[in-house]
Length: 114
Image 1 (tube, helix red, strand yellow):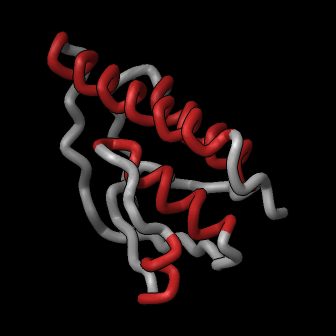
Image 2 (image 1 turned 120 degrees about the vertical axis):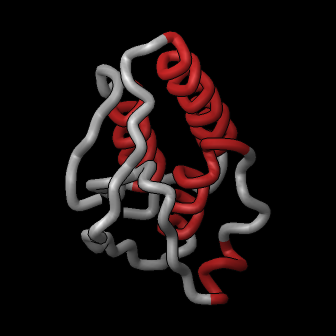
């Protein structure tokens, strides 16, 4: 995203950064942007997708571990921040839970390739 619009305290986003770095060595700017573009071969290497909000982390880790290069491009998109409300914190809690599930599921397989 071209403009940073946050809602929480950065815990879920920080976890996503650290999980990706830990699992495959990739440094990301927007690990949970929701936007992904893959060639067919890279797509096949990332199937089946992780469920829920963990899909983005799973795709990134699986593609990098399979030897594909990661590139990030700034897009002129805006994020609809959920804010620091109960609904916002519940949303980020679900995200963090899904991120942790993907992290744990990939800890023992594949290893870092960097």
